[in-house]
Length: 274
Image (tube, rainbow, N blue to C red; front, top):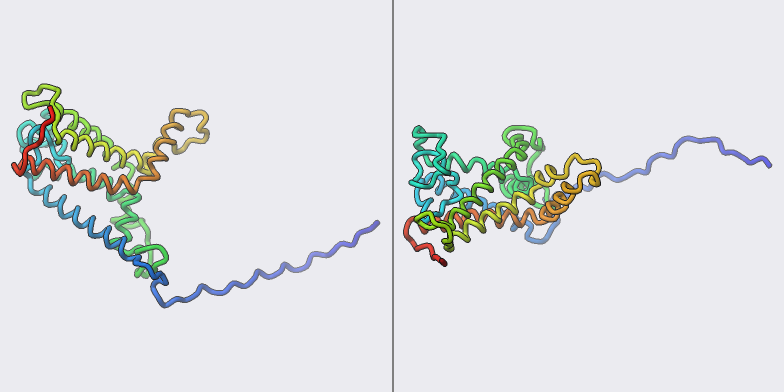
């Protein structure tokens, strides 16, 4: 039996959609959306002022076998006695400024190019955007294609440099188990402070997005790389708490420096357990 066929006709026009609603208000949110970027700005500004002051102070960074993370490794000959890393002073006598200025560029570069911190300070300082569902005041957006934001593409290299500093700071904590005579078996509150700071920095680094990519990125078949898959799984779990580790480690490194400074300037003595 013959069946009727319907000749193809013109395509139906696409349904018309109304233009985007024009809202005069910057946002329709009624909560205190501005509180989070404001607190972020205040904390980051406080840390910047503190770190800058301590970096240029060039004092009170080594005492009782404890060295501040702002000054480690101390690699110039104008460091206080016994503080350089095994006498390794590649900058010699010509470096007259604070030794911290040779060091801080790397950990600060790692944090400033960090994916989470970029989100935090973009919102807090540049309002780009200040919060979800809040219009930003800028008329155009160029992303990270121009100077200085294009330097954020170096984040992966700062990540690798940060791992080296984590190893050094961990070694500083281990060396703090020695007493003034160089004998092992000594432990003080400062020893625990240095080790806690190193642990927090490791958690921050290992939870980094670049770390996750370095371990499991560019793999087509996880089944062929079981060890890397296990590492990627662990790092992925840490990655969920990257924001938490970012803030805790930031406070941790500042408090560790403050602790060493207070011991070094004699404000209080470093309690010894054994």
